Each structure stands twice: as structure tokens, then as C-alpha cells.
Image 1: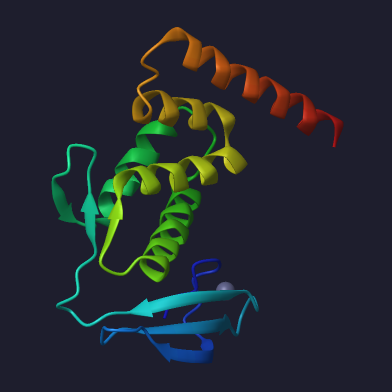
Image 2: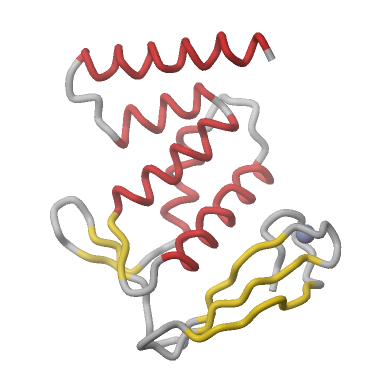
Length: 157
Ligand SMILES: [Zn+2]
């Protein structure tokens, strides 16, 4: 297993348990290099996580789509390809260990926003504006207010 934090392939399995009603196994691992802990979800090939989109259509989960979305939002920001790759791995790992059969695209979007919030506020707004579509100016202003507050909070730290 590749550690989502440092990329090391040396890890130790701390706990291993089958997921009810499936032949999948959830494993709690600790990276031998950076000592961080993470969960992996090992599913047999035939169990594919499906993404339910807002128009109710479904498609198989695809890590590449998350990559493209984040990469687009991070253009012109000071974020390295390495950081984006780490973000995508973190999100993918969370999704695959928390959801078994299906996940709504909304949850994926919110997870991406959560990560971007901690990394780069400009990228966050860009992603949010595409993803939430900011259908009206009020929603957009609300988001900006939230960001401004967060920005002030960060300066005080
Ligand atoms: Zn590690």
C-alpha cells in the first residue's frame, strides 16, 4: 500500500475487518516511515463504487475526475502538482474507505472543498464557483463573507 501522506510503501496493518454483506475488507494501517495512520478499503474487482450525479445518472468512481477538477481550480495558484496529487489520494482514500456501493457526487464535491479550504482560498472559491454554480449573487456574497472572516482569523494566528 502506498502511504497517502508520504508515498512510502512500508506499512503495518493494525486492524483488519470484513465489511458486512460484501467480500471487501477494511484495514487500518500505520505508515512505517511517517507513522501516520490511514484506512484502506480492499474491494474485490467486481465491487465498483458508483457515483450518483445530481441528475440521478450513475458512473463508476474515477480518481482522474477529481484530479481534473482540483487541477482546474488550482491554476495560477502556488500549488505544486505533488500537493494536488496528495490531495487527490487523500480524498480517494477517504471515499473508498467510507463508501461501499455508491456515493453522491455532492459528497465528493464537498470533500474537495473541505481540502481546498485548508490549502488555498483562491482555489477554494474557484472550485466552489464551478461546483456550486453560485446561481445567484447572494450565495456568492455569502461565500465571500465567510472567506473574509476566515482570512482575518488566519492573520491573527
Ligand atoms: Zn507515510
